[in-house]
Length: 150
Image (cartoon, rainbow, N blue to C red):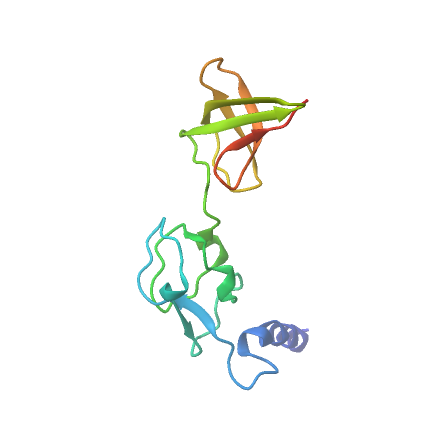
């Protein structure tokens, strides 16, 4: 039982050791201190090849980090776990956003207060400032909210 457990544990660690490669797999880490809210760029990252066993949820692909926003302080040389970064919010709770509705030639645009944070493609709620009605819509790439016709 113990030998089997060791065998399984060893197999689980193979991707971290760079199995099947000439050397260890490069691990992107911060090149400098990155603060919460900073948008990650390629220049902010450095590849490290001499590391101890990183956490299981570490981000291995540099492309998965570029353009993300730090949720907490990231220290140089330390692995970046997936929960430490997020997609940039286009809608922030409590801020004013443009809300638009279009259907059959009818177009309505108004301002509303966002009731949730949101990224592009996410469904969020917002309160119409004039009527107080809560509407649900999809966050657009420009940061506006599109309400679907019913």
